[in-house]
Amino acid sequence: MSYKISLCSTISTLCLILFISFNLEAQTKRLKRPKSSVGVSSVDNFVRESFDLYDKVYKYDGYAAAGTPLDDNDIDVLEDALVELTALSENAPNIVSDLDGVGVLKQGKATLQINKAKKALAYSTKTAKELLLGEREHQNKKDDESDANEGNSNNNESTDKKDDNKTSTTPEQVSNVSDNLEVLSKFDFVPGDKLLFFDDFSRDFVGDFPSKWNTNASGEVVKVNGENWFELKPGYGIFFIPDVKDLPEDYSIEFDILTQGVGKNTSSTARLHVILSDNLKFDEGQEHYAQVSLPFGQYGVFNIRAYNFFNGGAGDINSQVKADIRDEVLNQPHISISVTKKRYRLWVNEVKYLDIPRFIQEDKVLNHIKFHINNFKDGEERLFIKNLKVAEGGVDLRRKLMADGKISTNGILFDSGSAKIKKQSYGIIRQISQVLMQDESMALKIVGHTDSDGDDSSNLKLSQARANSVKQALVDVYKINGDRLTTDGKGEAEPVADNSSNEGKSQNRRVEFIRQ
Image 1 (tube, rainbow, N blue to C red):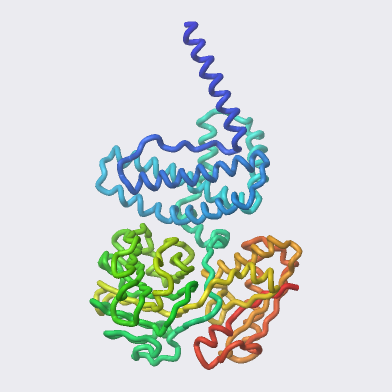
Image 2 (spheres, rainbow, N blue to C red; image 1 turned 120 degrees about the vertical axis):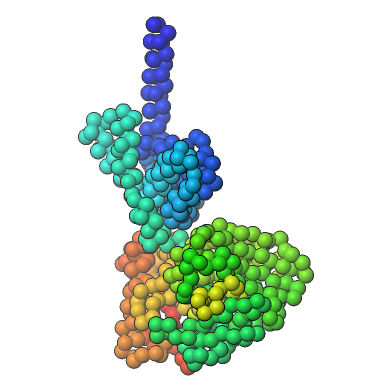
């Protein structure tokens, strides 16, 4: 009997110590990571990655509870975590389908672990956003007051129920977090600032092969919903080559994709290849090339592939990166590629899937861009591209703005005839916000410019509205004081290039930032 009393007393003391220690670390009861795996790789990976991110965010939540301010490195870690949380959350519904055919007991265990991982993701997403906005400490005080009103119960079951309520965000809500501009604030693609090539096919006749391209087969400009798109034709050894020559060391490539007829029966090998090549012939390259291919199959998750070939032999990279972009390729995605000397990065919409430090193994040998598609069913599954833009990069807009007091960029894009900012433009706006955060005394004038399409008065109003949209993004997304920002619109009155060409129009559609 005395042994039982002593044991109970010891357990009670340990529980009290653990409870006190826990409350010193953070205000929210910690979710426990599952101790054993399920044996289904997709589930085990999802649970592990969810709790890895959860542990990271939970640590910073503990700092906030203790009143410790976050430094710049902490903020960067949390911003990166938000991007990872978004991608992981969007994969959650697909993981459930992986349980088909699994035994009942294993399926039950997997379901419990998936649900627990979703709770961890919901907490992590909500908390990371609050921490970045400086709201978490205030929220923890509210939680304390709420706990006090409910009697500060230490019962584990009661605490678990309260945690369930706090993290009851539905999977649908979590999967939509990528639509929140706070998440987009981490999108770090910045296009080159000197335009080298642009083609939206608006000056080509429907039915013709585009005038600024070459091929060894066929393709044509088609009209889709009133806009010209270039349809690529599938086949063996077929290449589509834009008139791009002598690529510099630092540059960006952007284009939009549209598909038709892609569905569950689309082959797992249906791919778009984007190739950086050493020649203008109809092959990948003679001595040097680097290529990345995007998957379009819909019945499963297929990888983005990266492969390089230098000095006549296989290079160091032959990789397959897991990327569920099935929904993206059906919904007109924007592809962004950044090459900075040897480094190669690729984004689909706002998500970065590749960041390879030494993908370009030899300097100044890859001078041309080629496209190739394969295994699309002819006449049934179609792929179109539009708005191919190649621009020389290398200028850090933050340093240029601080040094010169003025920058002009055509990398902030808007919907046609609209002041709605395209999501892929937030990398530049983020850089502007960083300058304003660095120098809190700085005030900026934001000036919008348009090309000459349309009448003068409409363009003047549109340019003003676009400048206002950029200001609003800085205020709403990056929390810049609006009193530091003024706006103006010049319409088409101050062109920097010839409005008779697509390239010139692209340069004239720009936004200026001028230090006041």
